Image (tube, rainbow, N blue to C red; front, top):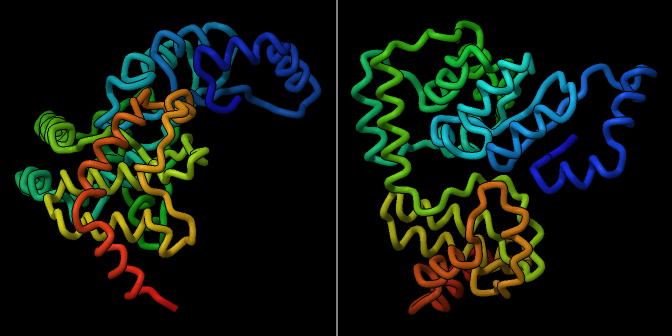
Length: 283
């Protein structure tokens, strides 16, 4: 059952989903019944207890210990003998970004044993004995090989106390410098007004993470001006329909955050930047 939360579980339960799952398991169509979740912790526990699930899938990484199901939900599900699949272990790739923000990179350099940011993040998840499987998106063969190498010897309890403390400091630093807690999941898309919400927030976070105003402002018009896609997705296109607020797993006040994007990137000089970008990418 995909993306359950409190509201959707009540809706699907009213349609007789429990009976359907029982029949599907009885006649062999499925072997194990499970659900994925992007809601509130209290709802997560309620859904865990509502049916004899075999597994669940939750978002979990060192920035999301207290978000959604969180560590408490992870332990609750495991205590109920559910297998736990972790999605977003790298927060949509943000925790594996290269280069890392300078303030974060300086912390990683303090480690006695040097690892890539992706390895640190994946090892942090695998350090929890309640985790059964990690789902990690990969873009090329090099990332695949790195993740396989990490998976080969990462075990629960394999990180030292000093390493766990370092990762906690990195997580705290990320939370200090990131402006929006968007994971780039894309559940808010398509926007009825055409706003490219994940890219708007990614560009805003890049600005506050790396502090490169001119580069971020140019990247904004390049990504959101429709220059590459033919479909503009500027934050100022937001009509405050609230469709995205209902869909956002992070419970973000998306329209208000889009206003921040407008203030940062859509002021003086935006038309000139857009004209420059169009001239550079003209066919």
